[in-house]
Length: 394
Image (cartoon, rainbow, N blue to C red; front, side, top):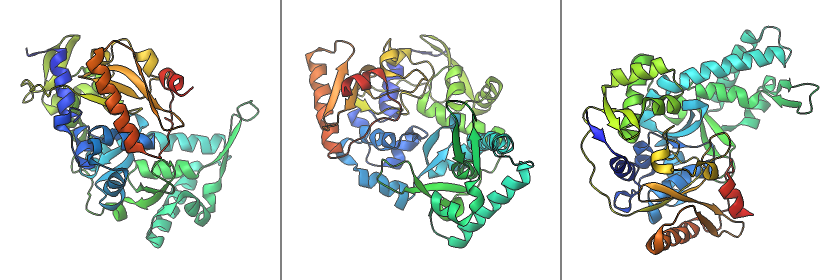
């Protein structure tokens, strides 16, 4: 059985995730492909994840161009009910392997809430008719629409749900966002350009057919799609433990094992225990040399595995929030050594959690200056804040 040590996993991470300087890339779509997709729950993550792998080669404007003009990258609700930016070519397999099941779950939950909190006696025909009406509006208009514009054309989207009535945390919400989310998860509509800056979380929507007319549905079964997604993930994140893929996809253990078998994965020995890798992907990786990276909150590298000890050490409590969301991390030669934050002044502040030596400190400081320069007048705060990020911004 092939033995793969931590040093080899760190070299693979540096090369395949384009974090080493020699592997940097000027193409946002290629960067996203190397990671299967970019986490996009926090809009800043997409841009900072690309920046970390391109240095000064890519500007925010060029990333926006890839997203909204060339449309090489697409936002979609996918693995773990998380928003990702996915390369256009991967959309069919991600839709079939992950998003379709999310759509079913989200629609079923909305039906329950319409009945329980919205007073809709028979919610299925009501929701089906609203969905058909919304899609007809998009087809008739033929242009991207903001949520408010869709709701103005279809008043039933303003149907309200009274959640936790009588409780101190009672809330009233209309169903506009949830209907659009379900339609998007089913692959009918897609998030386009935001209504504000690239930090905005409000988007204009288009039909998938209008936004990506050349993309066709996956030609195969859900099982075949899962096998293909497992292969893509192993190319990016393997070798890894079975539990890592289970966490990343949120599939059942049975589905994960079936997908790995169908993908042709073989057992390997990792330092922490048994793992899997693709049979044709067992060769050693050439050392990419020294490197430093400032990865943003929820970066796909940090969030790519459930078992992170081999690169995170004992820094998890300082750099993750209590629900498992990663904050901004500082990487040095394949391991996490600290955290960083942007202060209101624009300064990039750092906190090292271990001794990196004089040379390591100089490299970290130089990268902090480079990130600060790249951001310029842009100010952002991570959506999920961690102890180190809060401390640096205090």
